[in-house]
Length: 108
Image (cartoon, rainbow, N blue to C red; front, side):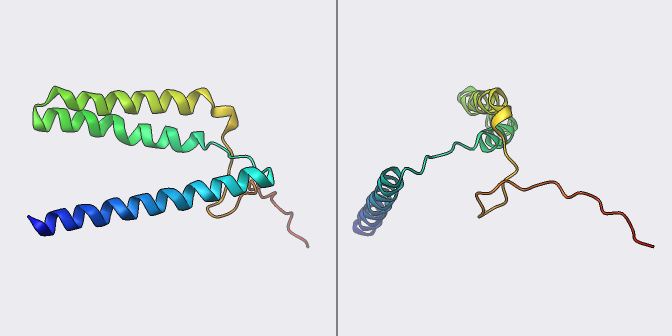
């Protein structure tokens, strides 16, 4: 029992430390005037995963409460699709949108 309490306390402390670090980083970004962008494509992707996962869990566990996960999937997909015009082709780790590569003509 003591081990479980210790593990829970360590996880709680780590969570608080991570939350403080993230909060300070966001405050620094706000002071610099760097706006936070929302990645609506990620919302759509999460929705695509949550919808079938919720339905599969509902069927496999015979628990209608899992339909809530599917409902979250639908909500996330709607959020992502309603802002589809704000989707950008962003490479991982790079804030600059990628440009399509123009085909070059072969030289003779």
